[in-house]
Amino acid sequence: MAEPASDFIPFPTMDVELVSSTLSSPPFVQVEGIFNIRDFGAGYPTSGTAATATASGRVKPLHLFRSGEPTRITPQGIEQLRALGVKKIFDLRADIEIAKYKTATPEIEGVEVVRASILEETLDPVGLAAKLKEFAEDEADAFIKLYSGILKECGSALEKVLVHLRDNPDAPCLVHCTAGKDRSGLFSAVILKLLGVADEDIAADYALTTIGLQPAFPLLAARFQKDNVFRNNWKGTLSLGSAKPETMRATLDVVAAEYGSVEGYVKRHTSLTDEDLARIRANLLVP
Image: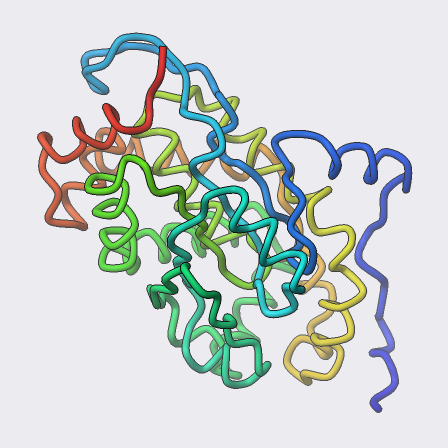
């Protein structure tokens, strides 16, 4: 086993009692073997606007879930996932990513797994090393560049999730990537913004990953230290692992500036119509 890189610093840890208390309370849910799993609707209030064409209300709780990879889900975790009513899992990871780390989503009876891959070039060594250098030099700018790129490339995957939400009002779903932070975080943000959730609440949900990833940091650190690209660009790797609310606020500002609104973004990158978006809101909002 390789020795840690000379600049190795562990991922930042938090107070154990705070982490335990937070992870055992909503919006986090208990599914043994899956880390960073939570209800990202969580009953957030929404504001009725002309853009969302809906009255004020709140997001339907226990319907929209996000997480890190479910590879290590246990038999008890499977029962807990079923108890949450999850009918479909959307896996946003690249095929090469799953193959490299041997982290395929297990088959779960009664739960359909949908491949919705984005960022197939994620593990290209040259491109990845360049990205990590950018994160080491200017974290805020690197996140905007990364997230803007994901948003431009993920239309097909996003459409799969939105069509499910449009056509299945009584079928909770789980969206996941590797850490449940970047790709899952962007999908969560787009959906919540479509529903009329305030930017501050969306940013707060994104930042919960800082706590949600605490149990997984040893696993992720060990995995990345075996990979020379991550190992040799450790400062950038640490920056890439952060989940600051200002990162999501800046991303939402970029969407507004480039597309006018999140509705404008969705209609440019998917085939969904205003009628489709109205149906999604009707399915996911409650008084």
